[in-house]
Amino acid sequence: MSDQPAVRAEGISRTFGEVKALDGMDLVVEKGQVVGLLGPNGAGKTTMVRILSTLLKPTAGHAEVAGFDVVKQANQVRRMIGLTGQYAAVDEYLTGRENLRMFGDLFHLTPAYVKARSAELLTSFDLEDAADRPARTYSGGMRRRLDLAASLIARPEILFLDEPTTGLDPRSRLGMWQVINDLVADGTTVLLTTQYLEEADQLAQDIVVIDHGHVIAHGTAEQLKDQIGGDRIEVTLRDGAAAERAALALGSVVSGQPIIEGKKVSAPVSGGSVVLVGAIRALDLEQIEITDIMLRRPTLDDVFMSLTGHLAEDEAQRPEPTRRRGARRR
Amino acid sequence: MSAITVGRPVALRRPIYGWALHDGFVVARRNLIQTLRVPELLFFSLVQPVIFVLLFAYVFGGAIPIPGDGASSADAANAYRQYLMPGIFGQTVAFAAAASTVGLAEDMSRGIIDRFRALPMSPSAVLLGRTFADAVRQILVLTVLSITGLLVGWRINNGIVSAILAYALLLFFAYTVAWVGAWIGLSVPNPETANTAGLAWLFPLTFLSNAFVPISSMPDWLQPIAAYNPISTLVLATRELFGNPTGTQPQYWSLDHAALYTLISCAVLIAIFAPLAVRKYRNATAR
Image 1 (cartoon, rainbow over the protein chains, first blue to last red):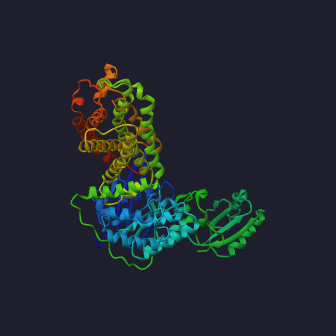
Image 2: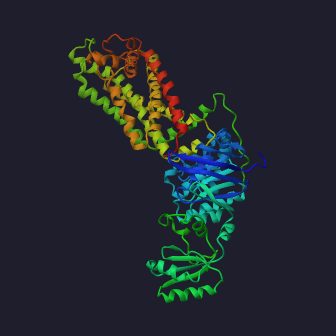
Image 3: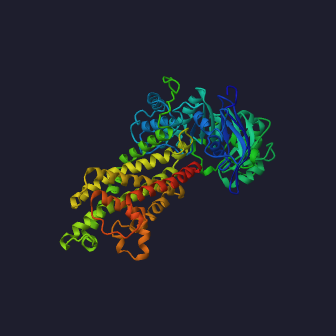
């Protein structure tokens, strides 16, 4: 299996009754790569991870993980992978150390190895002080770290992370990102799913955008951004009610379809900073008050919008740190 | 991550008893640790049967005569306590099934079941561990119950060997119904339903038996049902092994061979429900 890709999936489909969760999904993850599976809720990300981690059988298609068939050689696949799902899959009543011991034992590793590896993981995930407390006393971030540690007990070659930071507070999220980046530096192949565009941008070299159960775009973050052209103008209005009028007013200075997100209106532009002056004039003429105006590189939000015609995620459930900041330039 | 100090994973050699038992013990250890971490749950699971002993011994005690025992009215209450205790034992171990139902339903409602299923472990281990731990917990319950029984006047009259056989039969029965409970726990949609579904079948099952009243006191059409109820034969066999009064039995093969019929019933139930439960588990997903 030396030069096989870590993950190779062809034409994976999965239906649940009438619902087509996956519809001919193809995916290749090379060894040592970090691939981000990006899509809105219900796009099929979790279904794909569940199929690749042998929890679910595909209704059609073929997938290999580390060279093993996920259906016919499920147990061999399980030996090679670690899985961290959307919920911390640890036992609440067991301590952190007992949890790691249990999963190590179930991986059929020697007690000496499990003990040493547990201690190492507890230290590097900053859980040493809490190691002998039941996991139900842990904070959300600590549980996620313990969950990730449990996935790593047998040093898997391939790690599946299904929305690893969903529901975490900003600080814990940054902590998880750090941990994941360290793993990647260690050479682990990672397939992560996320509905946070910023997360895919931060963690993954390669991004696979999926919607309605199949791939709609594929490339590095920069490639995807280049797909929709150059800089964008972004205007923050004092009053969100004026957004439609503002979009109309900007029509003469921008080079593409404006996108409205609450009080923000953004659109692709060509011609650099001179369009800023034109935009301010156009808005002033319509007597639309603005609080901020800027030029920026496109974000993956813009990519998603231009690919699918809808936003990647529900604004209401998006936690604070991934909200687009006016000051941020990438 | 900090410097790697631990080398590559070292695999365990396959134990002679196989991976299923190895993994089952690991899961059983987890379930027993859980029991110790929630002493309140353990406490109340002990209180309930003890209350049953006291209620039946003192409230119903004199009202239910044990036919064929020939005890004088003064001894009637004491005779009933002798008769009652094996009934309470039987009822209690049967209700152990509810713990398996709720425990598995709770596992299923959490992400941990996905982690188990993504591990290269035996697919029957989660269920082996659960049923084994639930049966082991009954050792403690039976101990507390026996002490309570001794305090209200119940006695072991047939020697230590028979008594050990009686307890062994009770634990085997507990293990058997744990599989039925496990199957129910995997079949219900959520832990709340498990709470009700786990108990619903146990009340008719235990009361349609000789646990509290002699079968001969039941209407004719009910007697065969009670006679072939494995709880009846379990309780009858336990009474015989403890040397407690059994009352007179109507003529049924199951009652004439109480211990044998109980063992056969247990074997049949496990042969049916263990594969059903493992199948459910393999196809299950976290809910």
